[in-house]
Length: 155
Image (tube, rainbow, N blue to C red; front, side, top):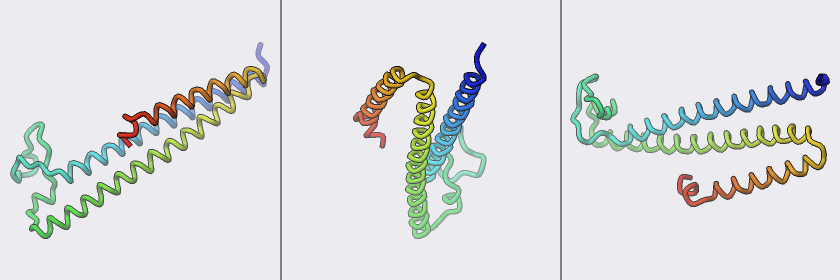
């Protein structure tokens, strides 16, 4: 039968896996939320040019709604001020998204390194050395993939 120490290690790894998985789920949920905010900012900044002002609820299926401020009938001067506000909002959302993603990636990296350290502690010295070389190779491959042209174009 397994010793209490082995059971404690397994329990620790199980808890770590649950925390790690929860972080991933929360990260994906946050990313979707931020993407939705960016989409809304884009939609507000890109008014529907093919439709006229319609009464609320008269949107045709598949058409984007016009921003509410357009339905008020702003003057050209007001529209200019509104456009600058919307543009600033879009920039703030972009910066927020970038900072949030960076913070998320830093947090995830810390969790991965913590899990790797715990896993490494289970191995004997020869296994730990092999594990280190495998993780270093994976990190190098991931770094190479992140710096590929398609990834640089997205950022």
